Length: 136
Image (cartoon, rainbow, N blue to C red):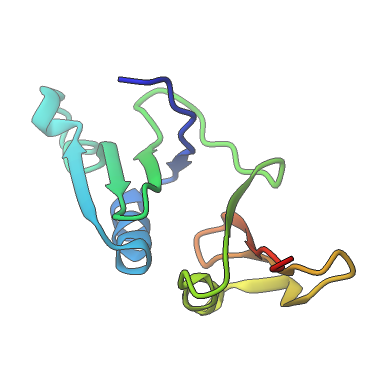
């Protein structure tokens, strides 16, 4: 396997719901494994997500989990997930679905550098940048 850089998000108990949402947008396959499946007998975390992954037909890979037992949950805005592509690849639809229930910070429109770009925080508190590259 070639080396890859994969976004990995930690949620505070709603990783399954978030990953099902992202799967509905990105398509492909979703795998979800719980702490209980990997031997943690604590009923408080048995159904929480230890590891999940969406792999899309376009080659996107997104991973996530719930906060591990004994670890503090820390949220922040120091990270964004960026999706870039050419016109006609469906990123406009991805933007619309991510924006539903979220907060748009930069509207998805033509920017000064020529691309159609937008920045939002989705309903799960994750920042996304979507960029449709201008055709030269």
